[in-house]
Image 1 (spheres, rainbow, N blue to C red):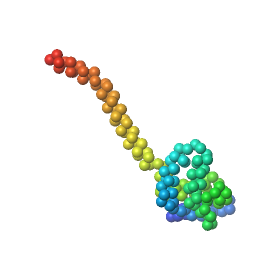
Image 2: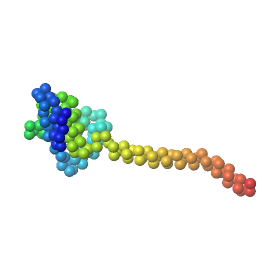
Image 3: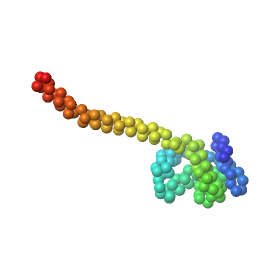
Image 4: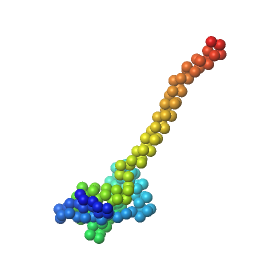
Length: 142
């Protein structure tokens, strides 16, 4: 697979094909970036995943034709491996976080807060009897 700034070359039975990658318009890019996690990575619904895949592939073009229908995709790319390569190339070209690094960072931040809160609650429960004992001894004057 060869890739330049805005193209990707895939191997098909008919030879190498160069696919042009396009930039998402602002609002569509915002939506496709947000939907990547929900409609693609986390969804098990075939229809939802296919609709998202076609929405992304609509920003790829072979021989002047956008890959915005199943027929256009099948004709131009031929194999699922090529679909996968072009799909990921379009997303990467549009700076979609394919590894969900930002979300992972937020998850660890959330997990850290939860761990700290749980630790404090548990420590308070464990130390309460000791604090009560110390208070009783102070009242008795010991």
